Image 1 (tube, each protein chain N blue to C red):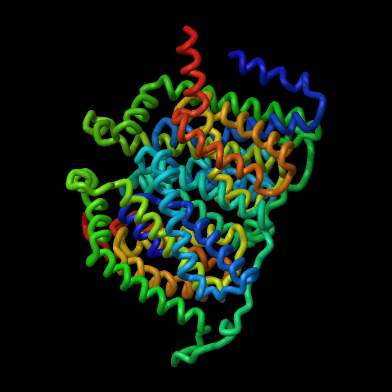
Image 2: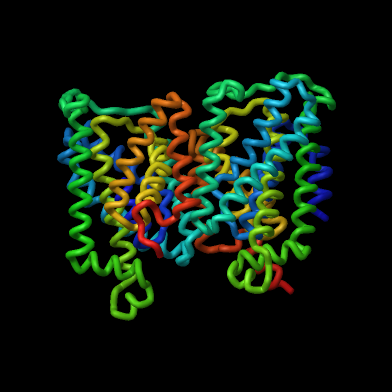
Length: 308
Length: 267
């Protein structure tokens, strides 16, 4: 609740464009991370190819706007539906054939690569040049000259995603998902239809990642095969929840804030050389995996328990 | 390359994402040995193999194993973290410039009947087969090989009969890295080096291993050959940019329908 108010009034206190951009991207990664968290954190199905959903959101929205002249709102809705569809498709295939653990991770990565090669080869999707959405500011086009509006757009989307996750965590569906994560065979023995639960989770996750993709295309107005479907975006999707704490509602947000802060810190200390950010991210990931398997949220919870 | 993965995967049931990064490191090592010290890539094979064996041993024993707590997906994440670190360190230190070396014999072509093949590629093929045979001997004829196979089949049982599981894990990881280093030396004369060069290989190598059957060396070798053919043909039929898709599609299909691989035994 406190966080909600903090993020709501935040733009009022931000004078510079830089910090507005910083918090906008932080919330964007928090949203993307949450989509991964639903499947990977709660369901224990670690995806290494979340870009496949993100890219679908961005590309479908861009293609519908540019090639079919649809308005941004309709395109966005259809793009999210497409993300859910791709999620259901990937999930149906890989869960039907019983892929688990690292096999599932690899197959998601391969799917993302297939999509990347496809959009890169097809002129219809801009091939190697990518898709450029023409700039037409206005609420009808979901484009804003004033960047504060973008902040509120991602704010609303993130709040929605976190509310959904919060609901999921407290629902029967969420309990089933946790049961599958802890021990899939035992969960099935208890009569849980693991296939359907996992399928629902990946569909929801895909839709949420597509929302992030839609926001991305409205914000940057450009996507190409590497930005949309490249492994970098898949890694982005899993870093925030893993560092913040997978399987917790606020984990991805905390992770995204930590990563954003770390990125700024390293570029402050070491200069803006390419790769330095990611280098720090990689080190942080290893440190977290080693010492805080439950992420920063685990640390917070421990501190809470210690004080009470 | 695929052989290294087959060993690491088959024995440890580790999917090593850092494999491509290690290949990249080995390529750079070979590159700098050649440009700074004038060591021919082929002459560098024993040096690099030894160095990477030691490096891999240490990496598995003191970094990957303690962090991952023995869980499958954790290992995946740890090696992903490692590959991010290695790749970006390379990017930071050596910039993203593409580097190549010039050796005289790279331009020598050998007529093999149907077509002319560059000499280094022929050497690479021969060496791959040789390494495959050596590995097979190592695995079936030596105590170390026996221990590795024992650990891969029955971890607890191996521990009970007195095999140090941690040592064997690290040993096979080191061996895998050594093979990657050798592969790098063989590639270098006809290839280029950039910090991103490993990425292209990770999925290809995985596909080879999955295709051939996890943990089967001959399978990895045959899988590699098969994949080369598929890559060439899909490139020919679908064009340059769409051609890469063949590999990924095969990877997905094999994982879905034949997870033990074409030559793997049923578990």
